[in-house]
Image 1: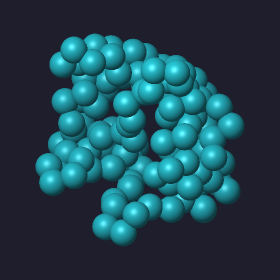
Image 2 (image 1 turned 30 degrees about the vertical axis):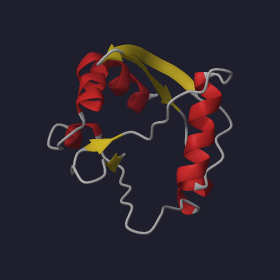
Image 3 (image 1 turned 90 degrees about the horizontal axis):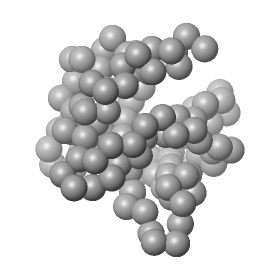
Image 4 (image 1 turned 180 degrees about the horizontal axis):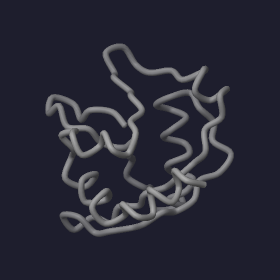
Length: 112
């Protein structure tokens, strides 16, 4: 997750989907652009409408190589959190909604 520009609110990497591109392809491309990580695949966790926009949330497994090769823009903050720490963060509304609606699903991902 990274903080939203000028708002100090944490959010997931996101991108508005182009008409002719799948949500999966869109997020894989945006993750690569933002972090230089090439994901093999993503799994849809949920979708929800927030402020009249359909938001998708995906999960991907990161390898040690992914994490060791992470890149970010100057001044861009990127951090990993344990699920119990997320409650202490100031989250962007759509990110907060995701955690509220998917807590059990996220906990199950952490176990597997």
